[in-house]
Length: 619
Image (tube, rainbow, N blue to C red; front, side, top):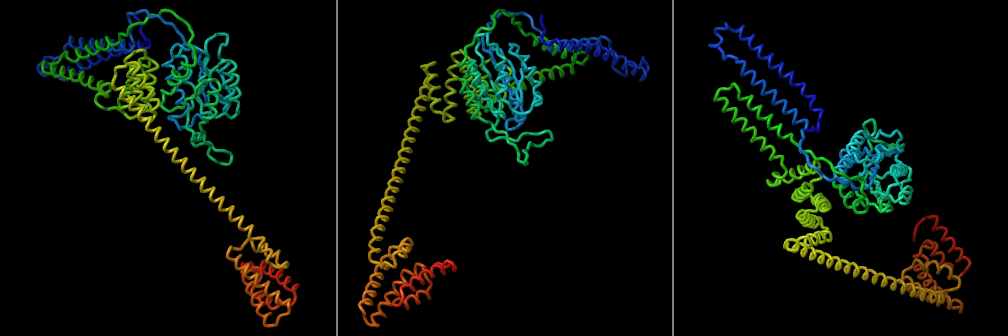
């Protein structure tokens, strides 16, 4: 016989205390009865205390307590031999313990979540040697490579952000220390599983990745945190701030983490669905990209658990202790109460039983119960499959697909494999991943070609994919038509603009030929701000100016000169006055002197520009 928990035998010291209390209580009652009445009258006044009843009640109680202690010790006897052949790889966990891992964007915080993830990983690891390296501003080996997972758990429990005295985050030093933890003389595949938020103050992580590539070590990265960031708690109960008082946010740097994993032919996974994330990293990453080598082999004894026998014996002796000394009516009532306790116990067990909760339709409670059962017994793939079923019924399709995908990787059982593939297809279909769903249904048909539901779902998925493809093509075609229409509009606008420019070029020289030599420079400035209507009016007025000037040169009468002045006034109003080159008074003075002194005209024009700048008015 062997016992799993030898510490429970220290509880045997309770038995002498129980015996002493039973004897003390018996004597105290007898002394009290003697003070109450004469010994000859006691049988008529009270029920006599029989030593035999006291002895057997005390004896049964002590025996029941003794059996309870034995059950707690975990008795095991009887065994069978089991062939054990340990095959695996060397895995070093590189855990970030910097101050940023205190951020609470994942609950309870990043570091505590990471420690739980490693603990869950140890439950599914199959024969791999595992080590633990911590890094912050510096790095060191917390636990060397070992097959003793309990040792890893013990070391992990003492890890905190204050474990390393050097603050900061030096990812490069962490990778370098993890590489030094391997024995490169052995041919066993080597893997680093880095759990971090991706912040690298020294910026040496990617450089050390090249060193890992040269040594053939694959780095699998588990990103923990949110890309949006979270504040970092400090010692005062507040949050860390920079020198100018701004709140410091620690953000998950997925870009660099993906680069590290890709460079070493590893894989990156972000913390989303809890313990199933590292499960995916193990079965869909490490197991696929590495080859398990034999670490040790032999036969071991597997002892059978027998604690339940002593539990039932303890219950039987407690019931017997309660029945001794009771009147027949009370004994019957006590028996009924004991039976009710047993039934209530079974009912409570049924309410806590995940299978029963699932049958009753309490899918949320069943999911949580299956998760707990899966964590307690990770080797039983049925718990993982049932967990996926409960998650699916609870509309947690992401968790369901992760559970079914894990069950597919773990089991060789044909029925579980088929059901997992089929339900994985349903979960992916619910998430909108129709390509993945089609692959899953195709796998289920391959396992069980006669299943009609799988064929129907596969056809429905392919039909949905085709419909989505057609919708996408129609959408692309509409976008192309819109783009072509926009290009045509742009070309038309360009052609219109070009035509306008050509028209302006044609009008410009014609006007210059019609105007006087003295007005050429001013007309160049006025043309840029005039409309087409103004240009036509200016051309007409210019022709009138030419006629008036020709008449003046030929020596026409004063009446003709007055008419030409009127024409000049119109021209001045249309070009000089409207364009804002001179004021109204200056325009009248210009008309009065139009036939006298051309030099005075030039001075008026020039002075008019100076006046415009000073007044700020736009005529």
